Length: 308
Image 1 (cartoon, rainbow, N blue to C red):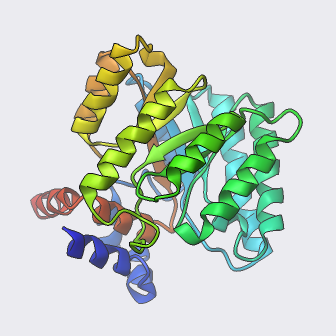
Image 2 (image 1 turned 180 degrees about the vertical axis):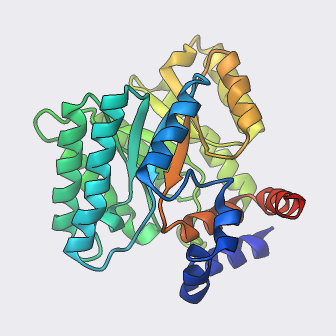
């Protein structure tokens, strides 16, 4: 449903609607399915619960496009606290970070400095930082920063990045990142991109996702495949089995609150699964992109909202 997708992505940028939902009881009631809570401790409690099911976690403190260096440093402080808490509690969890939350739009140098500090902290704690991908205008800058941080002494393997299968450029980006030894999370993509840079048709996105997934599975380092599409998951599993590639060599990643049944099924089959757990008060843009990605989520929320 291209129209529905475009509508929800447009709504994700609506500031008055965002202010209303992020500060209302109605918004809190709506977001419970996909958001772990408003505070850091909420996310940690959810992570512990998910870990008990044999599923790993990546924690995301929601927020993007800060407007000052002070805001960027405050956002980074939440991640530093997360890394300490994960280590203290012995959780199977890493963190996911958006560079616009680290000040990218104010200064790429600021974002790189803050991200580098986070990766140093993660390495000291035996952990890992995943840099999330945003819209295509930021793709090259994001990749440049990730590759430079990854190349710093002692940080190889402590930072990874997200690649979006709907972008035409992603095949070349995956080749370069594999050559550099950078761990990738492959997803389909959740922004409204023009046809000049991204496949407009879902079948083409799916085909590119599978082609890129095969490259990652064949790679000598571990990568992550982020999808709830059972057809694509089955195709990846079949490809790996045909190549005698062990399930432990890659992991499937899914969103908190989406396809819990499929998460448990994959774990029971011996596959690694990691759930993306977001939290925080700036949840509205993330929430709208989840609805844009999967119209079935709209029906699910409507049924459960009126049932409660």
